[in-house]
Image (cartoon, one colour):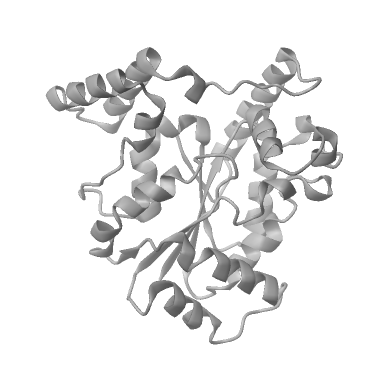
Length: 291
């Protein structure tokens, strides 16, 4: 079986991707792709990993978990999504390390299904906006307390991915930038689900609907109906053009308001992020989805 873990990251798509996947669950099921509701597996997997505490699962554990998640239904591909598979936002910088729990959690999740093909999907986000967003979700009284001594300039997604590769060496890793999701949303649904390329899906414009004005959305849908794009690249150019004119500003622009964070610091963090993404795109064993 193919086991798909959409592992977030925290503060990226806000469960929208899972909701879009669930919209298509009946269509996907016809192709042996199961997208169970989160209540079927999130607590179950978390408690199983906690109880094992790094030990190897028993010989029957895999089948027991599959039966519990699928209710004895058959599947060739199982999609599991949770932005907190690694940790809650409060623990992202625990021990002064960016996602210190990544190796343990992802290694443990992969070991639950040792004979299956594991695919890991991870959306990245610019640390200049990720750190403020994660801090806002945390219970920390101050940013210094939240970071546990971690220097924001040292935050690198490539480091997290390298450690995940070591913890789950047989897993496929697919990543993208959260900033690009409006342009690649329908592709993400297809890639995560593994659905046949010719299958029509619902929800391909769910994210656009959330960040574009109602007028812009109406005009966009009318335009692609009368001028259907012939390629994925053409469709993304159309989306970009309509977003440029009709995007809801507060939905796409994240204002950074942290004590001591200057515009220059935000620019420097953004530049470092872009360089990090450039490195990730070239990492062996990593598939990068770009616009």
